[in-house]
Amino acid sequence: MSDEFRFLGQTIPNLAIISGSILILWGIFAYLSSTAVTSLIPSFVGLPLLILGVRSNKDKSNKHHYMHASMIIALFSVLGGLRILTAEDPTDLMIASHLILIVVGTIFMVGGILSFRHARKLRESLGE
Image (cartoon, rainbow, N blue to C red):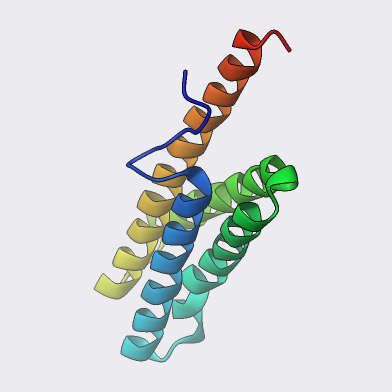
């Protein structure tokens, strides 16, 4: 069993960086398209995800703490995106923003959960 887990060809910290970057860029695009401050919400979710991914790559001894925190951010992303189910008269941009929050958050959470399972199996195989 390999020590390094990869999901979609990326390590989970790199996936956090990519996911955070996607959300930040989408939030900026949405803001420039509508100039509503709430359009930046994906960026507000993406920034901590990006920071946690970078910190995880730099501080390997605390990687698991950063990744657990990033999973919470991803959960907030999905839950925030589900708000679209109760929105009245949503615009196309609003629907797209919520879908991006859901999809990016879900992909990251699936990768993170599989990574945690991999780490547990690795510990068990080493007899820890």
